[in-house]
Length: 113
Image 1 (spheres, one colour):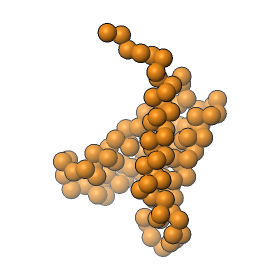
Image 2: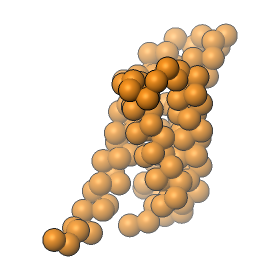
Image 3: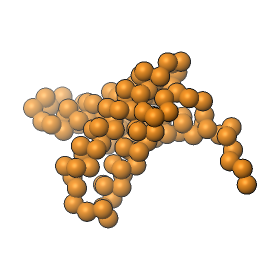
């Protein structure tokens, strides 16, 4: 069976939406609190802003916004994996690993259709 290459644009948009939805559901309340003294606020700020930029980058022809957003999201989630690591069989580890994988997908592919 051959792969459906025509679904690739839809799948990339679903990945962008999934990252944005994850950032909104998980970090928007922390971001909204504006507690500048905590590291969680700065992590939430980075993830919320660059997730929004990842979605915006899909509307732009150039790859810069998408690649930079994916890189920042990937670096932050790798940091979260390292800091929160307790075992490989941990739901938090698997969620952040998937988020980092999606982020680095956009670093490697950009806006290729």
